[in-house]
Length: 149
Image (cartoon, rainbow, N blue to C red; front, side, top):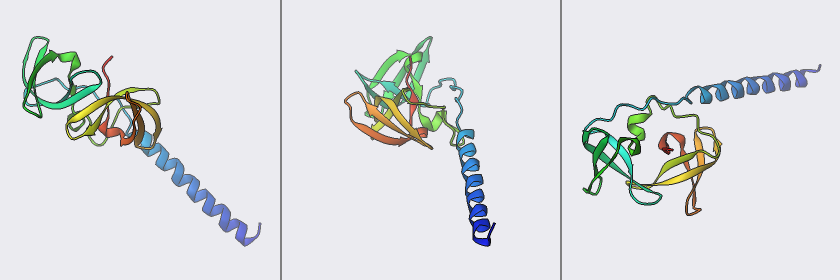
């Protein structure tokens, strides 16, 4: 091989190694978090009406019911299975679930308003999502919550 081909081969090899290393590291942060026990004061995301969700804080827990104070000051009571810990509580060390295309999620829209969505594609740490009204957005996976079944 001539000198130019040797240099080109070594450059291609270095880039291939970097690509494999970066791909492996991106996948390494992907893991299903353990849902923490709900507790008073915890920041959560809760259903409102239809596809809409809201950010709030837990006021109290009695049996299987949780009272949540929404960001706008309203109080609501719901089952514990309907309450999702906010991403700032759920995801530690910048980890996130292993989302895939087709997964149902709850995603931030604006401020404290969230909405049900479906993941349409994933690229690295970002996901392209489609809301129920067909509007689309690209968000970091650490901003998404897996929708309850």
